[in-house]
Structure formats: structure tokens, C-alpha cells
Image (cartoon, rainbow, N blue to C red; front, side, top):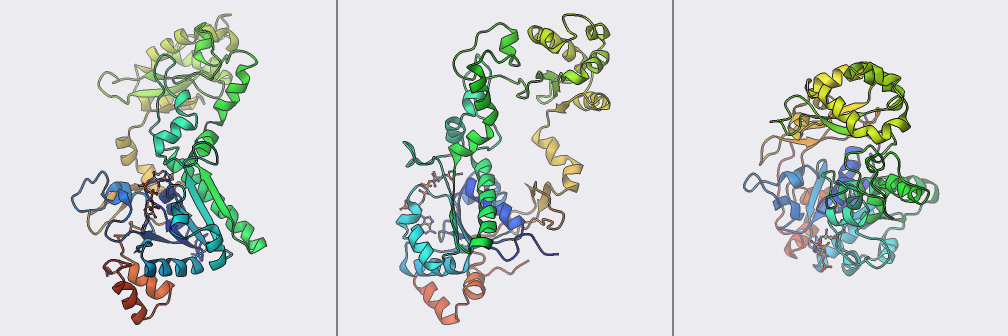
Length: 425
Ligand code: COA
């Protein structure tokens, strides 16, 4: 079966997390992703948070599946010639270097256009044009600068970052969409274009509902926030809302059986208005269905703490899974707090390929998150990440059609480090 992006060749100049997330997705959809890495060093994540001595870290292996790796020193003259040859034969160049690094390397937009007018050049930067455009940016910086941190956490606590990598992986996702869109437009225009994603913009896009609330605030208090019911006045910026639900239906995290010893024995519970009567029956408060203090959503707002304490009395008699089974029968929206251990062991995620075990020649088997986007005509098989420079020889020979003499010349120049020949699996 062919893959959706078969025939698309990506010159992958990415490192760390944001760019690699994007190119990994494109590789899963069938693009030929050639990752260019510095000889002897490679993507810095290869050695970051290493858990197995001398093996590529999980940080690297989990973000670079299905790619080929070529080592190339682009600050070496011959290395730059090779890079320019790759620009000529690739469809997309993806990079997430610090601002200006690509141009300093000699690869300006004009130069790339001259080499290959069909090339799409996709970049992740921390910020778009403006006061911070020159800054180097990492995940948590983007979460803070994009509005996520100011709206995450509890009202009386400091701003919090979230474990979901919305700055890095979130921006990588945005970039991937920009690339396939530009590829589609190229089918009409025949031209490449630039695709720029700033991490601040990506995070802000994911925080869209909070900018919605910022504007609502000018017309009165945000009634679905717990602080309204608690009589705490609002300031002039959207506050942190703890675990309140963002959709206007009150929701909180409640304890379940075993919470005293299990840090994840909790359930997210939403008191959605259409199922309120069912909630009353389940928790054993049938009179709340008609009681004037509880029957209507507006009447419940000042009593949310009392309501959730009662719900919690019920959930504490059940495990999170038992509670989930019961509540689902009545379409009462809820979700268990699942630990990474539980997710890693979840059979249904293994069955769909969302969690996959991959064999690696140095580190042995490891788990990774497979492609979360399922295409019916383009299934994803997750292939282990490449060793540093594993495909240098193969790419020079088969992609660039270099002769033995040219390869010797390139190798002699020091541009590729030592060519590793590892038998393909
Ligand atoms: N051969 C030779 N030199 C190479 C090379 C290669 N194959 N690959 C990279 N380099 C050089 C670059 O030319 C650059 O050199 P220069 O500074 O002399 O121009 C240098 O390596 C590294 O680039 P840089 O991107 O500055 O790395 P860094 O480790 O200092 O910064 C980031 C890392 C992530 C902060 C920075 O790249 C950045 O802000 N990126 C954009 C935002 C982003 O993606 N952040 C999230 C990362 S998950």
C-alpha cells in the first residue's frame, strides 16, 4: 500500500523537539525524511537524559522514528556543496535553528530559491517578528510567553507549566500542517514558499479559549469559573482557574477509592447540565433534581464546592474505573486520571498503534508513541530512529547519485566524519 506522502523528500535540519516532532509526522505519512546532523555530535538530544550508556536517548529515539540520518558539516566547503545538492533534490527543508543560523550557514531564502524554486522552507522560531524575535526559546519559555502559564494553576498559587509539550510538539504539529498545505498549493503554482511557525503563536492558538475569556471579562465576571461562585472578584486579566472546565459546564477533579496511597486515583467529573438529573440519582441526592438551590445551572454556581464534595463522597467509594463504568452508562462526562504507567500498559493503545514497542540495535526494545493521526489509506509502521550518520553513504549514493570518486572526495574533505555502514534491518 502506498503512503500519503510517498515521493515527498524532506531535508530535515531539525533538532531537539519542535522540529523533529514535525518531520517524524511527515515520515509516518510516508515522506522520505533525511536528517542532517553534525558529524560526531548529531542532534543534541541523542545524549540528553541518557538512560542506557552509549545508546541514543529515549528523548532522541522517540522523536526521530522513520528518518534517515546523514552527517554533514555545513561549515565545511564541501559539506556545503553536498547540502546544496540536497536542496536541489528535496521538496521541503525543515529547520528550527536559532534565528539567523540558516542564513549564516549561507542558506538564505534567495539562495534556496535559486537552487530550487519549488522548495518549501519551513521554520520554527520562538517568536515571530517583534521585540523578542532574536531570542532562543525552549518549551517552558513558550508556554509562559504564549499565555498558557498565566492561565494554568490555582488562583492563589504561582503560574504553572503543563506536562503536555504544547510549545515544542504543539508547534511541530502546526508546522506539519503548514508544510502539507504548502505542498498542496505548490501543485497549482509550481512554487515553493516559506512556512513560519512561532512557538508563542502556537501556544496562543492552543490557548484560544482563554483569549475568548479575556474579552468576555470586559462584559462581566466569568460565571463558570469557581471564583465567581465563591464571590471572589475578578481582576483585569483571565485568572488561573484550577481544574475548572473551560467549556462552561462546571467540572473538577475528585478523589476516588485508593487516593490516600495512589497519586492518580482521581477522576475528572463534569456536571453537565443535560445530565444533571442522572447525576443526582447516581450520587444519591434525588431531591436536588427539583430543589431550587440545585435544579438550575445558575442556582448551582455558588454551591459548586458543596456539590463536588458530595460527588466526591460517592466517587471515593469506587475506583476511578468503576466510577467511569457507572457514569458512562448515563452519559455523564468524566475521565480517569491515567498515569504514564497505565497508558504504557493499556492494551487498546497497543492495538491501535498509538503505543508501540520498537527494537533498537543498541538500546534494545523501547516504547514510543506512534502516529496519533490514523489515515485509512496510509497506515503507519513505526521504524526505529537512525543511528548517527547511518544513512550517509546510502544518501550520497542513491539520493545524490554520487560516484565512488566523489564520495571519497567528500569523505576526504572531513565534511561527513566517518561514514558508518550499518546493515539495514
Ligand atoms: N554542521 C555545522 N554546523 C551546524 C550544523 C551542521 N550540520 N547543524 C547546526 N549547526 C550550527 C548552526 O549553523 C549554528 O551555528 P551558528 O550559531 O554559528 O550560526 C549552531 O550549530 C546551532 O544552532 P542553534 O540553533 O543556535 O543551537 P543552540 O543549541 O544554541 O540553540 C535552540 C537551541 C533550540 C534554543 C535554538 O535552536 C532555537 O531557538 N530554535 C528555535 C526555537 C525552537 O525550536 N525551540 C525549541 C527547541 S525544542
